[in-house]
Length: 282
Image 1 (cartoon, rainbow, N blue to C red):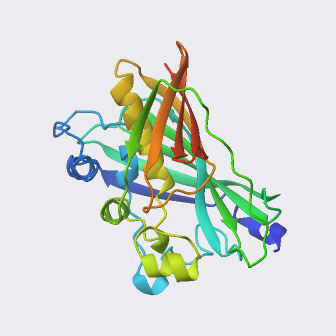
Image 2: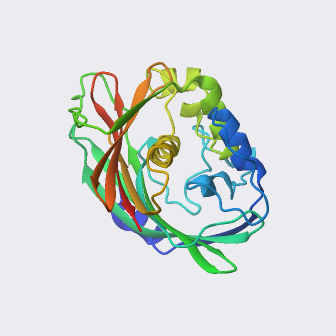
């Protein structure tokens, strides 16, 4: 893997614009089986609903076999086969409101090679996204995309991390193939591991359809909104620790750590940690 060549993508930028309509949040609320009022002009979007806009419009002939746009455009042509959303840090400055015209500027800001917990090579691509409306910067988002090879027979199994034993709340979630299809469609996420079971199990070797990391993060933030409704989230930082699949329920948990922050996480029923997050209140 020619890391020096791949780092030539650092600094690449793309811009997109979208009009914020009330329909995508309403559809997501229905998909999540949440009773929420329909938004009107001027109403702020619930947090993380900005991911429902700015679809990556790519001709079908320009897609890779995994469903993603062909590598080598905005993102570098990484030769490792698997691509996953590793985590993100988001700063919420101003609300995005229904009726806004929002500009999103995406920039590749870092490319780093690392070694995974099982000893396998990893490549992290960090993308920074700025969202602006007529009032200025609304959301600043840094997210990491991780690339890795598919496991081979005999490869070491990465060790699992256990979730915290104490929590203030724990909500059971059951994500099925219908919800994964709906979220893929709403976010225009064409990665086949989320909706094509044959591809996910035979080509990628997963035991089922993988739950999107942004969907898990959305469930964490929604649980925070349900249990601590009076708190205003200023920053959210989350990291995907282990995969979740549609053939097993999981828990979304939270713990108040102080007046100013809370720890959020998703865990499997066996107690292993799947996503870890820190919420800081303004």
